[in-house]
Image 1 (spheres, rainbow, N blue to C red):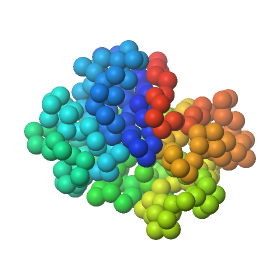
Image 2 (cartoon, rainbow, N blue to C red; image 1 turned 90 degrees about the vertical axis):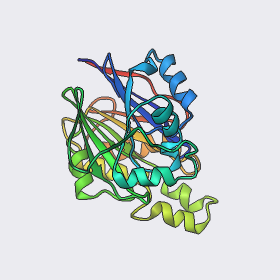
Image 3 (cartoon, rainbow, N blue to C red; image 1 turned 135 degrees about the horizontal axis):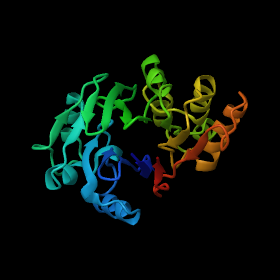
Length: 267
């Protein structure tokens, strides 16, 4: 069975990822306009009709903006924890509240969804409630871990099982420190419930990379305090320090904020 993955957008202004087979797929988050989701999928030869559900990581606006259209108007089930669903409907951006489409997930409890086994796990962030997703997609192991302030043992457990990893590298520490953000916002970003820096992500991967890991996509890059080339080079430097060569031993990609990635097809 072929598995398809792409990032439709990945950054502080909007996040959305697609994971599917030849016949159906799911979205992870939906923080970009509904029309953009449909058009981007179509541009890459994926019919929107193949989307069967949306799985939500947390209730911040850049992850949920289109849930009303997807859930109440397109009749897709919207999966999230109970507290996240409460936060979604309380969010200012939700002009179309969720009513008929609500589905619940529980942390560390696997959910069978067609050929996918989807396990939510807790991540430390300042949303109402926050999860990453470990997805066994017909035998291929994907892990989505975005928007987290530090890497807990629980997070590390799921990350280290992945063959295909989508992981946050939000900011460059020097750019953030020297940038124009007010101090309270800098403190929020660097807090244990904020975001991961390029260096932190690179150091963790260098210490914990396994031979099973085939792809790393660096996600949720800041538009003000990061750059794809900088995120890539920072993580590459850490990996090379332990003898792991990106492009040879593992594929490494820094996802762009508003531009879709390639459509990856894995046999």
